[in-house]
Image 1 (cartoon, rainbow, N blue to C red):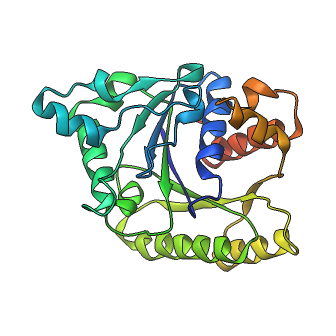
Image 2 (tube, rainbow, N blue to C red):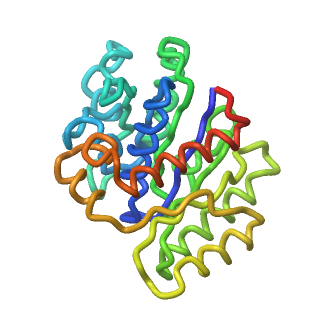
Length: 253
């Protein structure tokens, strides 16, 4: 089983990329599970026609010990198994706690044994890499972390912090850095800035996603690019990222 975490600054497009990578992998015949680890709980919306699914945190409050695996795992487009951790009411509680509860609940209910996914993708907000937000990096969860960034200053800064956290945790047996995904915004010197970032952490850019109206069109329809614009350049780029991820695991599932 391939287990990866996709981190990135809020608003950088990591959830859009995560959904599209999940779709690309499912299109290769793999069983995919995507777990949203962002308090906004919108990680998997493009796999559900733009709608949000109930979160583990919400359902655990409502159902307590009667919570079942069917309550929290929802099937989306391409048969992708979708989970949203959720978060507390704004201003109350720790957002990272939702991730901890979600991942512990999935283990307790035997989700991985039941669905036997070939690939598990944790989509994680990367502005803060501490507490629950670092949990997907821990041993037993993701094996590799992929960081989404543009060439914008604050995005590169956040990406560097994520890479630094991965580097600092590696001595504990945590996930390793799998590579950088460049989500282009068209800023000056973008490719060069992100290459410097990758080089600083002895990593590489595994794929570049151009800014495209095809992505916006698919998002407006609440769908993935492969459903709306399967012959587009950006669809091929996203498929290429999926291939590079698989290649990093020897192509095996």
